[in-house]
Length: 81
Image (cartoon, rainbow, N blue to C red):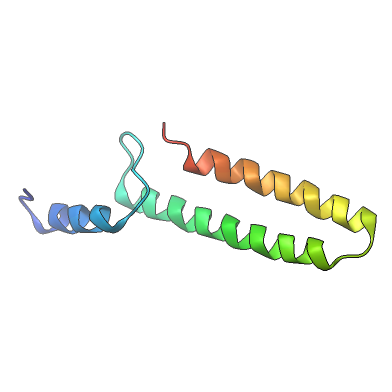
């Protein structure tokens, strides 16, 4: 039960967020982390499309390296601590 409007607002937002907050993580930090996760997923999709349409092997290798970096960032962002 929320005792003030800010706590009520945070509880309502947390109910709609599918990612659990980390221990002692504030709502604004959680929202920023979710924003970064969505950006990484968009970047991965764009790189996958580029990689599929690219003919040159060297460019595909570069795209694959970028994909691995983004996947590592995404893994760090989604791991619950």
